[in-house]
Image 1 (cartoon, rainbow, N blue to C red):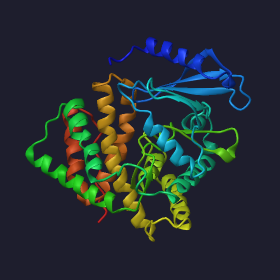
Image 2 (spheres, helix red, strand yellow):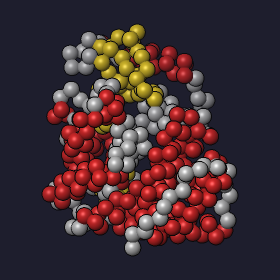
Image 3 (cartoon, rainbow, N blue to C red):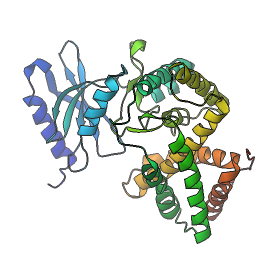
Amino acid sequence: MPSLSFDERVTLLTTWLKSLPNDWAIQPETLSVASADASFRRYFRVESTHPQHPSMIVMDAPPAHENCKPFIHVAQLFAQSGVNVPKILAQDLIQGFLLLSDLGDTTYLAALNADLSQANALYRQAFTALVQLQKISTPDDLPLYDRERLLNEMMLFPQWYLGVHHQYSMSDVQTAELTKVFNILLDNNTAQAQVWVHRDFHSRNLMVQNDVAHNPGILDFQDAVYGPITYDAVSLLRDAYIEWDEQQQIDWLVRYWEMARAAGLSVPAQFDVFYRDFEYMGLQRHLKILGIFARLYHRDGKSGYLKDLPLVLKYTRQVAARYREFGHLLLLLDQVAEQAGEAGQTTQVGYTF
């Protein structure tokens, strides 16, 4: 079935809302855009006179491109831990519509940009929720974040960031060295304790709630997997959309590490070992993101992510410069920057042995 246009989708969605039971007391004429993400999903807000849901969110997930079932499955799974995720109020999987409870419109990012003094409280609440999720993790409920999946993500870096975005062709030697880097990362990532992984646990997907006991509201979890325990901590502390200095990152990470140990999660007994795992996981994630952001621009026409590339590249360079085994990756990044004429983009090496 061919994809419908945006206007046709809205017409279908409005018709569906009008067909729902009167108990929801929905006012379809109040439909307004709430947000969109990097996929084909769109979110709308609609008002209601329902006593518990004065507003609701409608997810539009065109069936030709999206599948609502993983969202429903993960929402039910995560809710078992007690974290705050949207409740599914109504669904039409054939048309690709979900009616959800509304977790508000204030993201962590918006709140922090308005008032940084909230940071400690917000990040403490986020890590509390993360440990809640990780404590009840089981291996059979979500897809495995295995070596193949982790590698496929990193391959977006040479394909889209180097090859398309920078039109940079690697030599056979460079390809071999990058493969070694990937294997080092994969050996580390797959050896870490495995838990439920949100995969985008960052400031744009965490919502500030009026009742702090329900912080954070958690969104965009449909791609959750079972994988390395440090992944979501990396997503939060080395966020593509807001930067914290390394001392602040370490302070929060130590607090999370202590919470994880107290909860009986399988994290290393020495923080320096845990921090190395965190850094290696971060390098895997940021290589992937460089490729994804390049692909979003060149393939999907979404230019908004280009402004976030420099911070992701900064994270990538910092880790590559810190560990001797990633020296060839740092050299590759320097050569790409030199070809692109990006002065000042090279990094001083300070290897950790």
